[in-house]
Amino acid sequence: MITHFQYKPLFKQANLPGWRISFYFRGTQYDGIYHKNGQIEWGAAPPPKEDETNLQSQIHELMLFHVYE
Image (cartoon, rainbow, N blue to C red; front, side):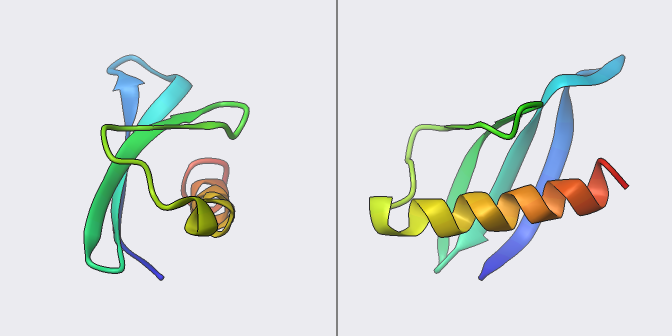
């Protein structure tokens, strides 16, 4: 489960082209850039491959709820 999910626009004056995201998953902090097409560009420490699809789905749902209300 994702906890402490945060997002903010990449640029001060616009929501596009993407958002910086950060969150905790299983006690580890992850960050990255969420692009407007739903692609996630992971930061320095990407999540394990076996969790990546699940995390992408959860993040997409959170972004739909918070950004694309």
